[in-house]
Length: 456
Ligand code: AMP
Ligand code: MG
Image 1 (cartoon, protein in one colour):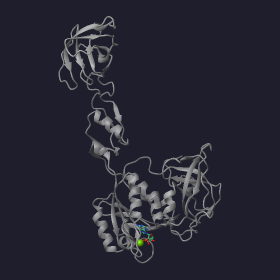
Image 2: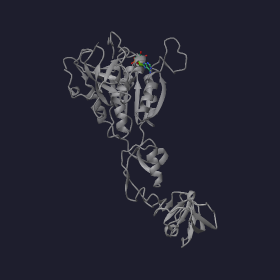
Image 3: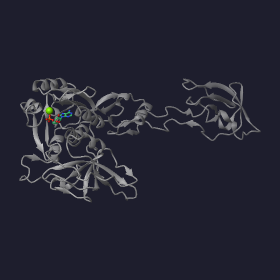
Image 4: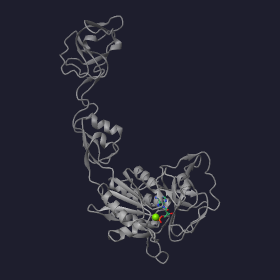
């Protein structure tokens, strides 16, 4: 598996498709490279510890102090001079005078002299003179007066020494580390309250289409629920973004431009869907073409051929205009927007989904001159010695969400392959991490496999 390749992970993918086949179409790699060249990682900023949770550390943290800060007791018991309790046992207990009580947080302690001890609690500072702590279970537990001690502790027993966990000046966490609970805990333990982190990119999602209504609203005649807004909001979140999903925008160029302008203030990246074909009402194209900073092109892929990308506003905020069909929008997001979000968030690695080679269990047709991304279910059958298998799922229509929801990968069929046969080995983009192990081979694919008439 290779976690740092392009959308299919094969060298042959860098091949430029013959221009005789597909004039004016760019390869997936070319479009991705153009996009990524325009994305700059967001600058780091200081955050309070809890707000840094889940973000990427942007500094090398050196321990500013020792942990523990002072010698302290690991047990509730008695701080003793070991010499005073040597040889103590059940029949011959050592008898010591309890001269002080030392709770956790005690600011001062007094020196333990010969024949003396201090009643000490877990986490309390070990007083001068004491060189071991006897757990209360080895004693008669007296609170004051004298205490009987029935066993001899080892030298230094139950004392947590200054700096034994972390030494001042030692490297603690390196830039690039994702701050989870354990790392946040370590920073707190060395008393850091602010750390430099990369912010989560703020991604604004705008669905265009006069036919769209909110899920939960009964669709009227000709209306459909906004699917893309939710798919992409969730996908952007999974990519590590803070997401603002703007409600549906009707097919009105002025309304769309106003909406985008309003959103620029809080966006590190904007995604629109719909309105990029050549039909009437293709408002995204209409609204943004005139600005001159957003390019609408065709990428040699299916689904998702119409791909617009550019920058907007004073901050040169990147904007992606994805096609309206839900699967096209999702595939475009996976291939181009997700890597852009990852780059914005400052990731050196992990820009791309992992790609594996898998044996395809069913044959199907594939369009010439375009890389086809086919929804699939990838598995590692038990007893297959790690052989990975994939079967296409659902049809290839770019409106078919049922199959997409079952899929855990996209099978990338090369541009020059017009027919996939059962048994062919193809690169597969993993959408959910490692392929799950299964007891049996995957279920049979649909007999026709995906068809691809008229998809974009
Ligand atoms: P368009 O590119 O705007 O012509 O949209 C292409 C197809 O995708 C049409 O069938 C639209 O109804 C559909 N579509 C566009 N946006 C969405 C959306 N947000 N949710 C579901 N379907 C959509
Ligand atoms: Mg539309």
